[in-house]
Image 1 (cartoon, rainbow, N blue to C red):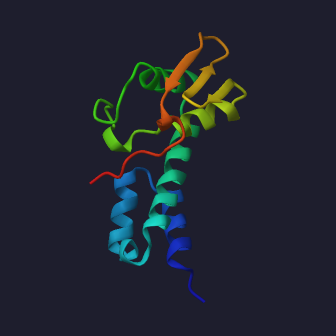
Image 2: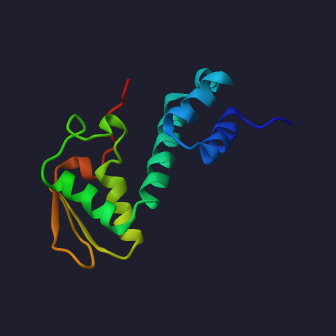
Length: 131
C-alpha cells in the first residue's frame, strides 16, 4: 500500500533543506494538487516549528525583539516566510523561558535578557499566506 499524499509530504518535509526545496518536491510529485489548504497550512507550521527549534538562544531573542519592536512581515528579511511570533513564543516556552500570553499580546523573558512585549493577536496567529 502506498503512503498517503500527506504522509509523503511529511517525509519530504523532514528531508528538505529549504522551504523552496520542499515546495519544488511537492510540485514535482503533483502533491501540491492533492493536498488541501489545511494540509499545506499544517505542513507550513511544522516547517516553522522546525526552523524555530534550530535557532540559537541569541537568534531567538533577536527574532522576538524584531516582533516586539513592531516589526511586520513586510519588514522582515524573510518576508512572509518569517517564523511567526506565536511559534517563537512556543519555542521560548519549550526552552523554559518565562512566557505569559495576555489578551493584548505576550511577555517573554530570556534567561539573560530583559522582558519583551509582543503586542497584538499575531502572537497566536500564523503568518499570512504568501505568493
